[in-house]
Amino acid sequence: MKSKSFLKIFLILLPYLLLSDDSKFLQLDSDKLILGEKLKESGEKLISLPFGLTLIKNNSILNKNNNTIIINVHGTRSKGYEWVSSLKKLSNKYNNTFFYRHDWNICPDSSALILSNHLLDVFSNFQNADSLVVFGHSSGGIVIAFLASKLHLNIPININTIASPLTGYGKLASKCELDITRDGYIKYPSWDKNIFFHQWRTQFEIDNAFNKMDYDPQDLMINNSEVTRLPSTINGRRLGHNWSITWVIDEFLKIPHLQ
Image 1 (spheres, rainbow, N blue to C red):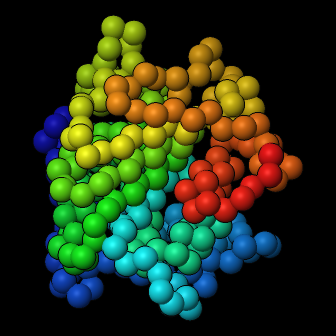
Image 2: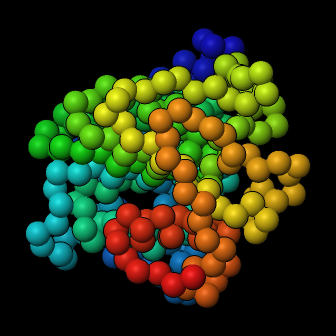
């Protein structure tokens, strides 16, 4: 089982290994991510990208932050549209904003290993980078929770899980041979002291991805992590599973939002 997993990882990485340094990262112009009536079409562009990191480019604004790397990781069966507005906002301020397209059929610890290898390329190409911020939505949060222990960089690292079922779900732990606690929850490896880990949790009762479960899969105590429970509304809308991305990114960018 392990050998098949490593083979699959190698096949995913192979196209990137064959690229030259100058063309290592795919790019998507943020102007092609259109809101409004074309939102779902824009989401399809995102989720149809090849596996790996894509740089979201916005050349229309000068004096942006060049020293922070922003990585955004989608969840299982994502339609992509839930990320469109936030990626446009992030690329307005940060030149090095990436969307990470991954195979959600691969176990999260393996996806984290693939992403950590991609990040080695990022930091070799952007050597002035002095901080790293990672956002992972839904099951993408599980991926970045495993990623945290694989990051050994001498810079501040901010890991943000958004509406993420960090306890695990279904037969994930046994299928992927993950370490589990006595309660049957995923046990994550520890990470370096320069990593700040923040859990952003939705209101269980109004999150349609979780509220039919017997328990809130977001409720996992992780050492050295901070927890914020999101409000029930955002700008007059129900703040459910997908809108949680908008709330957290707006909070990060210090964009005011009404409840």
